[in-house]
Length: 295
Image (cartoon, rainbow, N blue to C red; front, side, top):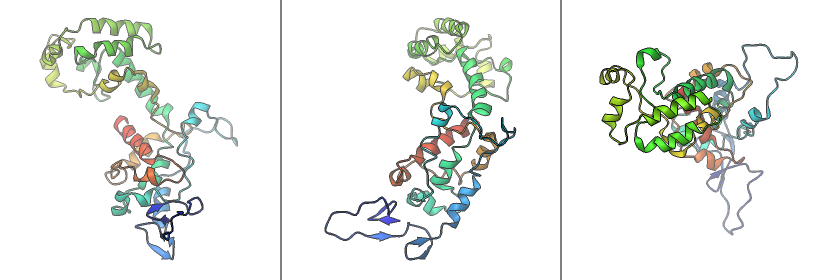
């Protein structure tokens, strides 16, 4: 319920010691059945729509027994499984107030983020991406052949050379031959920050501009990670928290990839402030958006 303007659990919220009376009201922007009781039908229907149960394409390793999970995979679920579906977060969200039928809300999306699988969809794609990036290419696309693209080098400016060198060439997780190749590519970069000169020199064929105009790639490569010197963070993907036992990642992402179901969230973090369990639904929704970009 709502107590003195803040959503929370009545059994955990301490009454103010001030002399003024406390105000208690039902959860905001919900249909009231009676007194402090609100209709939670729509809230639970949205929770059901994300299919919050494990879905597998392969049979379990051992019939009749739970699917094993490593400690690392289990740790990725911290901050999600504690949700008790009290609706404090969803009813504190302005986007949920105005779009309760379409927007799934923080609670449902938090549970949806628990289910995508790291091992079958994300990790292979990241491995391919890291392999090409370590060789000095960028703009990886599944729809075009690498031979047709002739990717330009990863580094865009000379100022990034030292940071890229530290991030890639000293990464023990990358094979030694990849690090050596990337070190050689960096040594061939022009020693100035002119984007025009750098672009013309980084094409692997003699057609330079022709290739660039024909295949216009995204220039957002590893700039942020290079600035932090944390290229390994991409491979580890520490911000992606999923349940490793589920095998319907792509289907789940497609189901919520909607303008209203997911993207009504503006990350104002009202839900995080309201959660009585101290969870961060806004962070999990942001994780889903990142998954959608890479799916």
